[in-house]
Image (cartoon, rainbow, N blue to C red; front, side, top):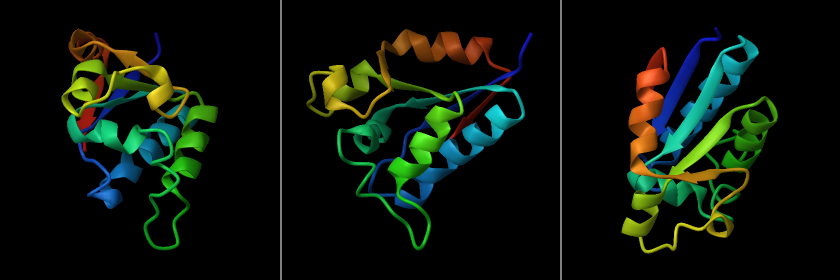
Amino acid sequence: MAKKIMYVQTSGPDSPERLYSPFVLATTARAMDIEATVYFLGKGILAMMKGEPQKVQVGSFPTLKEVMDQAVSSGVKIKICAQSAQLFGTKASPEEFEQPSEIVGAATLNDLALECDAVLTF
């Protein structure tokens, strides 16, 4: 059975330096043959709004979109909390968010946490 890690992102675009870590660590986990999921909750969902990752760049690091695309191409899964999306006034529909991402209910976070070997929050 493969190991699993979930990275929970609660920070949004107002803390751009915190947005990179889950993607970098999840990509590294995939290179180690560990299943990796980044779950966006609270303000974190704002960083996944369509077009937002292209705007985020810290120093000479690539844009968040570039780092995210690399993570996804390595097999990292992205989940977005529907209730958090609704809290911030969206319809919680896939076309509002960067793809590939999956809009999921709040219970999904609990289920994933119980299945994972480790959960890290940002």
